[in-house]
Length: 216
Image (tube, rainbow, N blue to C red; front, side):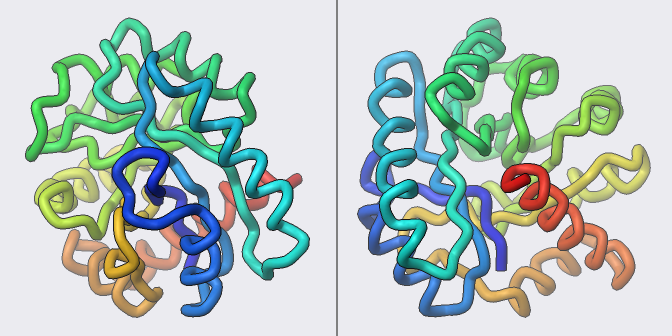
């Protein structure tokens, strides 16, 4: 399992990074990113700490560790500059907290995220077809999520992504150890979103594609 969307105690997760790494390793994860929630107040505090622990722990784990961040409830016009700052601070995976159905994310977040230097638009809710076309053109991945609440729009996201040839990933948005999943369950979530066998394969290949790019 590869997971590019996990939270630690540095935002609203339950586990310190070392425990996330060990628990994921113990259940057979191959790679992960810790992507704590960040805005203007904490981005320069969170990312360097994730970079530091990943650099120091990497020689002692079989996991591939990618420092990341999730830009969350950031005013849309600030997203491009914050994404640039996140890159400078060492984030390898930049996720933007999309317009999920279960939180009052400001309208325009999806659109501005897709015009920024990011990797994944998380749980983008009722994303528009034009936005999905832009995701495809800019090589930004759209997230299918196993997280309750955020997953309510998985079917909509998958349907438009398949129609417009945009690339999908599957992440857990883990906040606790109970949120980690194995590949068998990830397949069930993807099937629940309406994907068929060939399309399932493409999602996992997209995850591998990101990983190859980030470690090359």
